[in-house]
Image (cartoon, rainbow, N blue to C red; front, side, top):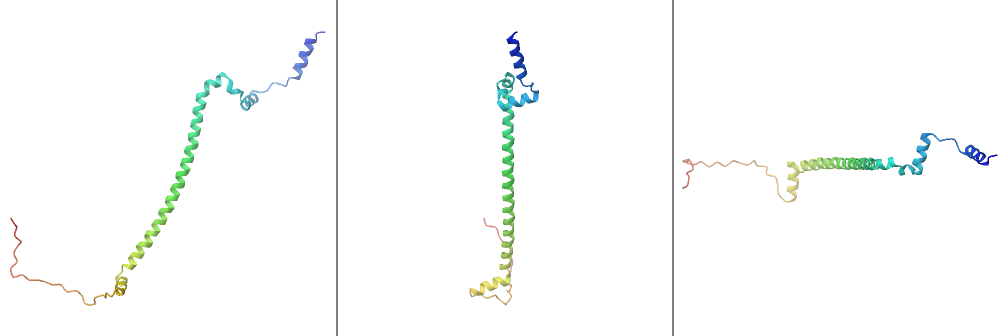
Length: 134
């Protein structure tokens, strides 16, 4: 008989069953053969554009996280400076009290006057309005 027909029948039996569309797509992506197709080469600029957008989106996320960290750092520093301001103001009010000033002046040999001040009045016999100079 015809040996050629017998070989073809044997080869047909050895071939695996046809793969589904999804399986072929996955295999072509894994092997990288999808990049050589003409349709893919025509879509390459769009793929590059999408890749650029994805990189920009990721960079924006990192930038936002850094700004949040910086904002938290500045907020905590502001709270710390505000408490320092309150403490300093409190200390200033305490040391500027009349009794505290008197204690500090006593160390220098200056005593507080116990006699109230007197107002000096000068009485003019004729009060003339000030004259203008030429």
